[in-house]
Image (cartoon, rainbow, N blue to C red; front, side, top):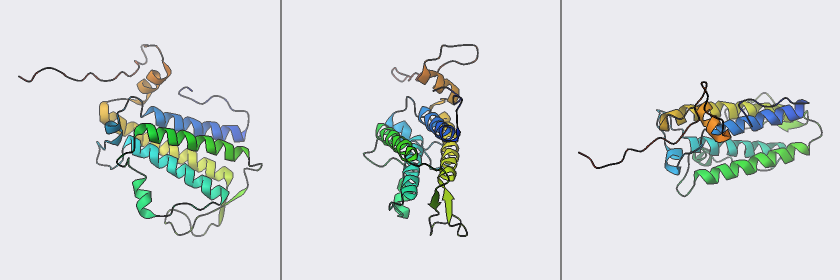
Length: 197
């Protein structure tokens, strides 16, 4: 996958392709990070690259539950834990879980004939409107694109603060682009060694 999604033939593939692309660029923000770097919160925010990937995966899983009318986790403490890597959690683990969530979304959406199918609006959480009873599967996919893109941008900023890695050089490194006058692929920063003077 490159910096822009490929052309799409229809609405359904367009929504899934753009969602997949936003997932991809979020994952690119984690390229080359250690677990400690993925946990790092180098800005005034409490967000980390690993925590953002975990959060977006949990959010997408929650929307799967809402679409399929399965029970979800409405615990505020669990919600806040979803923004950080807990002891014992690894970047590799959250990336694997995120890939599983993505595959499940593809399967769920493939099984829905009409993207206009109603999806109930959850009640009791302040970010959902109280005057709307239902959305559609189409709305949920658009919302997931929005949510993932927002947090991919957050991850880009945090990653830059962690080690200076920028989105396009990271993408070039992940995809094996050659060095050009436009971009030099990211490489792991050198760690200073030697004895102190």
